[in-house]
Length: 298
Length: 333
Image 1: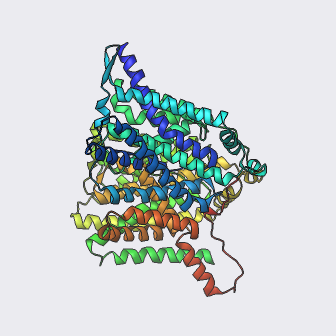
Image 2: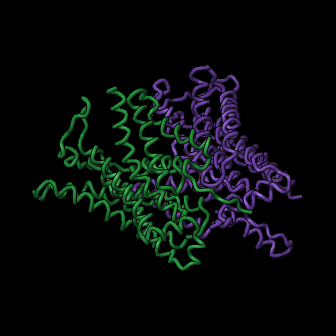
Image 3: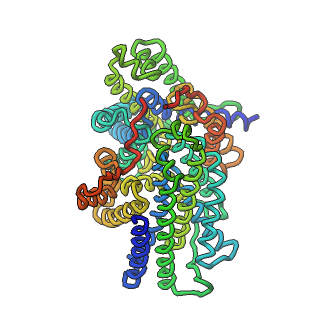
């Protein structure tokens, strides 16, 4: 029973983190048809920005709770700026290219960012552990959890809710859904697709960086972070169905729980299980769980 | 006629490379073997690309080949160069023919993602298996050749000669494949799958063949790399390794079977010097070059040769040998 609870809560914590990373990735794919490898870089940039901003904040001697505001602000703004630079600087030129080509282009961007991050922040690890311990711990059914981790679940739920509301209940969101459904028709009825692209990409990059920022207090922020994270995010969005927010949510929960079960029961298969889930889903649903049907090109 | 020319060129090039091997310094011998080993993997990636398919998981077979060699020496007690490489070949063939049954149903981005997942599974398994040295991998002793135990230098030279011969054979067979009906059907597949089906060729068979070729060349490359480096580890199956293979395929171009060899040579030489000069900017160079190639040079380095050749002929023969590349395909959106 305790084990089951541990798996459930650990799984949900991991799933929340996965969802925040994957949501931005799948949103950008849905709207722009770009499976953005550089999303991993946005995550890393968010983590580095948050870690250095939090470190700097604590040298000021201001009230400690302000660190959370600084963390969010630093991560999101760094991500949005990086996203805008990438979209305006490179991707703008290449809109409408083959999807696989765009994967390769964004792979190039990922490689560039890997070294840029090293040049800016150096190769030693950054730690921003203070916010992680500040919120204390709580006991659930005899198990101790760090409150910071539990709040991550709330944050992920809030983001999922906000995305759902934004896409389904606002004008901008409805326009976006029209573009996701059929870009050409959306353009024909007068939607400014180019402008929506910029907004979407900025939001996607911001979400990726936010995930990095939120993870920063719990990890050592190292070079190579982006390369590690992006494949996990791929596993989530491909499992759920590329371009589907619900899919990302379900994929994240599925993979989160599977990994937590593996960690608690059979640690040897921890890494294996993430891609194992993805493989199983793809065997039976080649386009993922919530994939939109596509017509064959003749 | 061109067929005969090609045969002569390939035999001459192989013999030349073997001859040069006798005067090369040790480090250059080593570098050349690793270039040939990686190029073998890239040949497979390029063969897939010619069919419009990008595998983000060729590291899987690269690693399988390497571990086949490593395990063959460790547990089966095989030490012979030819025996070990045969083991790598069989491992690639068996795993490729099984997974190919699964992979042939996937296209485009899903093929890329699925192949990536499979290679990450192998990475995950290997990095957790204590018996095989976990993330550290293990070392491989230098092979014997036809029963003879050689000094390290001589063994390296034997591997070098073997690598040259193997590459020559792979190029020759690869060219025969690309000039066969099956090979041409593969190119048609890139343009339009439904029309290929109307012509009476099953796209799945084409992809299965390509996948099998790619898995065999990749495991041969992996085996060769293992013997040269003397050390293997799970990072051979990590996705960034597969990314490197794709990078080289695009750099060299996919229009000719030998293009991957040129691409890999350029790549390895640039890397050797870039790592000396600017170790922290190496990936920036890679990334910029990758984007540059995709935008301005979609047919890779090889297109320089073919356009030069055409200029020399200067319209004498009216065959504009179009160089195929993945980039020619426009998206459907």
